Image (cartoon, one colour):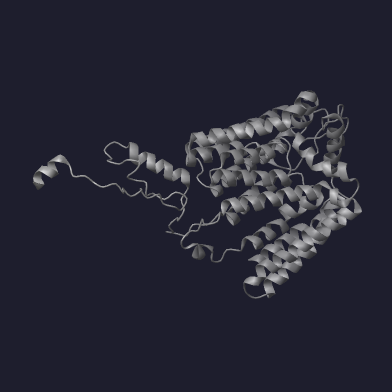
Length: 445
């Protein structure tokens, strides 16, 4: 199966030198096609379980490391990289990452202020390949995915029968390597990188929410929200997950942390340049600015918008309808795990990108990474397996149910043997000398 997958990736990458008009895409396609073909050969001829990590490593070398090195040394990149570098320079000098009077496409900065932070290494280190924003975007993605995996697989959180559940699954290292080497991630890593940091921050935020850490989840999501508007649907998904598993108070804490962190990163720039920010971050990506956006992949929303004002409003109406359907699904059937939350967010984002008046196929990297990474990272539950360390919030809810349910002769002390985080809290032995009651004493006389 891995051999067939790499062959399909080779065919897809091989089309770039023939069909793409961007030099960076054509160069990436040449390297990636050869790398995927070599990976397919390794997967087909190497025996045993070593074929997966070996073929993934070969694909990573051919589709990411080699083309990225050539592009960095040659100073070649998509225009998004130059936009990040310019916005960082403007932020450092003026307090705003936006040009006051944009006249052409390259003058617009369609990102929120947090994206400019990834260009600060260029401002501080100068013209060196190590300061390229693509490296820092990929670094944020890697750090967030590694941290999220550590959150989803805590120490001591073992599941009985997990070895049987994991049989036939690729290891996390091989799976993550294959994900990075896949065209959906390898291409943006090499040529632009702008969607990678918000992808990693969304994954980390959902992982923290799934493990009942609402403040940390809100902080991670605030980082994602400061990059691009496309990350904002992650907030209602995380809140629905927290409310369903850990209660409304946890959801409120997450919302407060997320909104406060987002305000701290965005509001200062909004105060300095409100008009420029609204025009470049809101109007330009939706095709309502004086200069048309270059985002024009033949997706349904874009095809409708090309029909004129009526088509544009129809695309927006369909987009609002999809958002409403997602909100209702969160209320009626909230997700209960990281995988379920990632699937719901990926579905909502896919609908949004498909129905937006202006969109690109590259935006779909975020839903793909969400779906694949959570399945690689979350501890699988074997069929019929018993969870050894259940969630603390669920245990507390069980205790409250037992104590307050009518007709239940239970007290908090009588159920204190329920495990908490894998430990028990047995009642202290009564070391005092027990005295017989008066009736017992009279009976004994």
